[in-house]
Image (cartoon, rainbow, N blue to C red; front, top):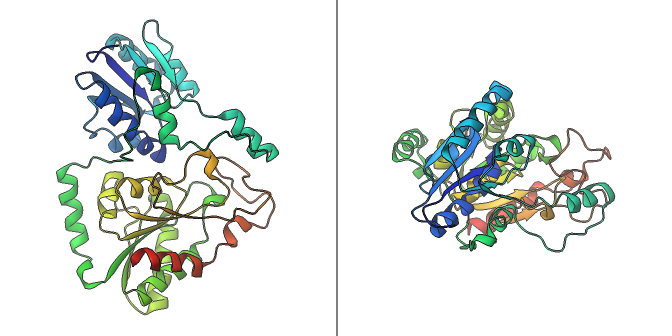
Length: 347
């Protein structure tokens, strides 16, 4: 395969997985500096990747179009005559797209058997713990592509940075010693540390470290973030907490996180965005474990977890409720412990 070849990377979702694919894109560009490198993802996540300087083009798939949309997309891909397709999703949709005559196809190894053994039988047969970002690069190792060790990245257009700076200016962050970001949301219940504990940590940071507290999340997190914001301000008799939840797009959220000294987060896509923005991270993990590859891709990140539970992990993506009814994986992690870690990171 020469540098003029055309490469297509497929990853439909979600936020974290797409951010975790950025090292792959960077090392592919290093390996094929003059090649064409394109990307397929769902439309709602496209902004995370379409400004990436290592890509030539991003296909935005509208999931509401169903199979008709997928068939149209496959026709476009066929007409481009790619020499290489890198499938880092390996779903039914991605298998359909990659089923073309001609291109070389390489697929991520998702360690499905090892994951199933750990979740269902609590038997750890992982030979090594490979972060997902490295599994993606592993898929193209036979092409002479190696990890450069530079971690995650997000490319943010200047107009987005300027727009966010205007919103942040209104918060007058220069009046505070530090800025703490809180990301209390997550798609599944067993990946959410209780909101009242986020509020207690936020209040402690506001009072003891003279910190401004910024809450981040999507539209589905607005109620939770608003309640946490109110609780912090009520506990501190101040206006030190502000919720940006639901007010920012994904790239705008990344730009706003750059103002944070520390980000305290659940195991969620925003954790990976904060990591890509090179923030200091405190990540709280409940029902999922390091073997699945989704710990923050930063050796300096702090991960808090109850590692002594025999029922953990109960899922590789999270559950709607604790199957054991005690939720010790989250409830045994105390606000004082999180605050003490935040204090150390704040210096």
